[in-house]
Length: 228
Image (cartoon, rainbow, N blue to C red; front, side, top):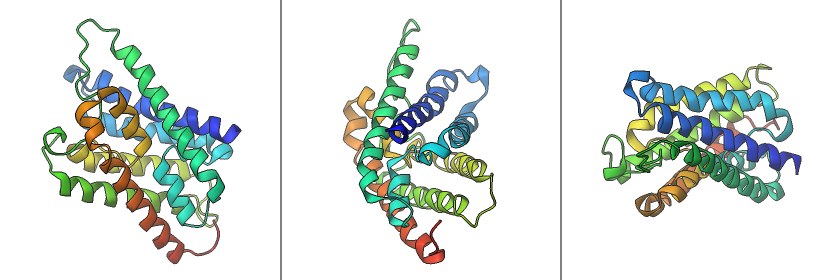
């Protein structure tokens, strides 16, 4: 239960910090954070939580990460579903808090609410295939980074930084394409509030990260078969 509570809190912080920076700060050009600021905000949520709850739950904060660890032989199958449920609920709670804050401003409009999308809902107008490739590849690389940085043979004490900076880089690459998911819990949390098109496109942001995670788990297990 402590692990699940930690995952709930961590995913809440990921959504509130990352999506919050997009909804509350990036909407004001005079603040100057833009895509770069949002990318760093997501990375910082992971860095802070890695050191806060990593020793409790492993700080997955993402169904794709849990699946990647399981495929890589580093996570117990019986814990997989409870972790995913805790992550999705944490993400929804984070989005709920963000909505309560954002809607406190007169004239608030839901808009995209930092949801993920493709086609006309892609920040850069990228189509379905580009979005699919982006999410699969970015998730694959993210899981490779995580499995490597947390391996027992890796340099100690720096996993949180490597993972957080990795997520920052992923956002810098893919925000223009899909608004960056690589995390089904993050995508679900925002889509539930936006509804309509966001729910209609949500399938991609579950399927693509899971594919990327499964492939990464298999590849890393081949590269470094020793238990991490």
